[in-house]
Structures are given as C-alpha cells and as structure tokens.
Length: 97
Figure (tube, rainbow, N blue to C red):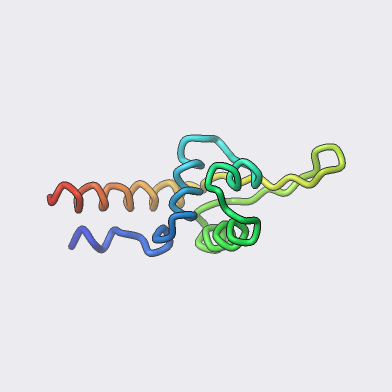
C-alpha cells in the first residue's frame, strides 16, 4: 500500500490539523482556547470542529460554568489513531521512505 493512502483528507485544512494537534497534547481544549491558539473566527472554528465530530475524531461536551456556556473538545480513540497514522504518513513522505 502506498504511503499516500494513509494521508487523511479530513486533516487537510490547517484549522483541523491545528485542532487535532492541540487536542493530542492536551486532555481537552475549550472553544475559546482553540479560537485563540489557531487565530480562527467563531464560524470557521465551529465548522471545522463539526467536521471532526462528524468523522468521530473528536467528542464535544457542552456545559455551563456559572451562567456562561462552555464547549470543550477532546479526541476520541479513533481520532487519535487516525491522526497518528496521518502524521506518520506525512513523515514518511517527507523523509522519502
């Protein structure tokens, strides 16, 4: 099988790649943290988190902290596995292996 087959189309946008990168090294991240780290607009971030949630790569938890709504995200087991495969494929492609 070709290395290119493990490059996952779901991660082909910088915002999605960023979301997954942040979530791989943090137990979870909330909407505002992702927005600030990725310099994304509300709408842009919302559409990309929805795409990752639809693929079952992240889960979403909505709660209230005091009277303020808070949305936080974390990777699923599938999401972690697929992202690791994606990164490994990119590394192999870059290293020409």
